[in-house]
Length: 148
Image (cartoon, rainbow, N blue to C red; front, side, top):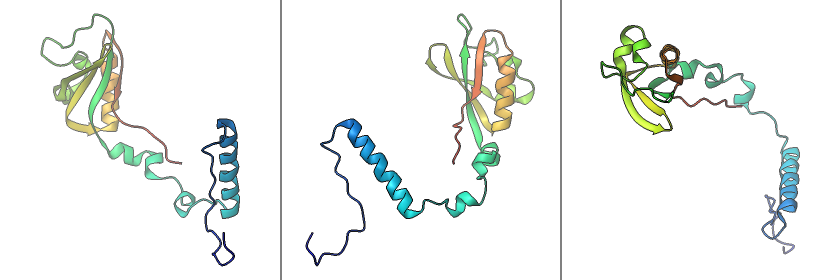
């Protein structure tokens, strides 16, 4: 760097030709150093409290269109009424909203819900289906995650 060049505003570390362990150690030190120098404080959104996803309200408002079911060996795919196996154990109008979806693999199948229901209702349907014989487990097909 020439004396007239401005000071760099970033830190550049070349780890391409280092052994893997040395590169990882160097990278860890660089990240820790950057955090110390910048003051790594929580952002305003983190300091404001729990997000709606963490407390579950956003998740409860989302709609679920399918369940994932795992059947025991020898379980039929459908009931005599043409509904997916396990629908006969579901109470109320939700029974009529269940349809057979695609096979996922070893004794696992998608059970479609039309019209879509809330996450809470999908969990109730899954619990009711799970009481049926020849069903190992049923879960609402939702992605659950926590944002720190």
